[in-house]
Length: 103
Image (cartoon, rainbow, N blue to C red):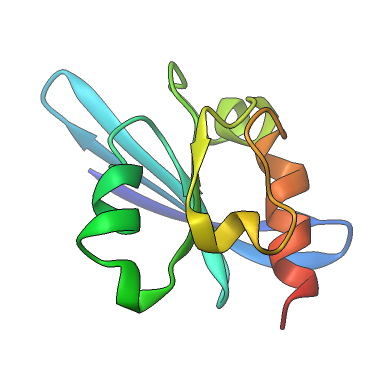
């Protein structure tokens, strides 16, 4: 099952997506600038193979719901995200609010 939900943080809109798969759930919260995602996100791939795309993204591990993703510290972030002050250890919600300031 795929679930889409609007998420409002400090009055700013984001989109939450949850995809139920066998034995796992993919989670992401995004806006037009970037996104945070569960442990399925491969930051190395984004930084190395897809570097020319300059993707702003962060990854949190061990999360099972969108709420957990928003509250979890980021385990890794892309090089492009770092350029905008998004850092490892920052909670998901804080990273998203920084992304919103970029546009």
